[in-house]
Image (cartoon, rainbow, N blue to C red; front, side):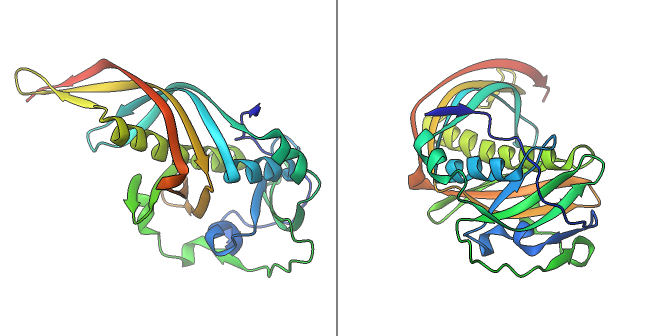
Amino acid sequence: MNRVVVFAGALLFSMSLSAQSYPDWFLYPAQYPTIITGFSYNRTDPAVDAERMYCVYQECIVNGTFEVYNNETNDLFLINSDYYYYFSDSTLQAIQGNLYCHDSFITSVARRDIVGAFSTDKTLELERKFLRIESLPTPEWTEKRYWTEGDYAYGVGFYTARGAKNDAWKTAEEQAYFQILTNTAVKMYSMRIAEKASDGGTVETASVMKLKFSLRNIEVMERWHSLEKEMFYVLVRIRHSNIKSPYVKPTYKKVSRTEK
């Protein structure tokens, strides 16, 4: 297996686009299952990111320590964590040089950051259709963090849109994975993230979890840019049967106390 921190990006193609408009393949990737999105970062080739994400989406191992904190609405947040994503060297070698870019757009002129749409089909014709965010309704899923429906677990990640755009989109996607992993761990191992004090008050706790998960067939369903909140959101889903964990080792520490 090859160890990489996959949430980085790349640079190669150029097409201008306003900050409030995106191609539909970017906002609704579930409608384009053969498209792999690649992000540039520090003027690197977005094809490099697309190749890595192709491998991650097929199968990867997440290994490391997650420190999780929850707020009063029971949302989970990642703090002080150290973890890595691993994927197969053979899968990466097989896909390198075999992805073709069908469309792209600029996310930062100053940084020369772009996002590209890639696939293994050289003959694919991708119709260019841009959508203005202000003309679209805000998706209901942006108010959620994690839920299950049928055979799938869904996770929503978000990150501020005020900084480097490509890095923010990648971080939001990473946070969506985190929501699925930590909520699955809590469910699988009956882990507590809040406990009652002896006087009836609530003692909030942070869970420090040593996780190792195997993930297969990861699907990025939708992306959203909230102009009002200046946030990027990403919705991801994974079939329950494609989420496996050989072990989870939790510990707990008290971080704050709420009186009755």
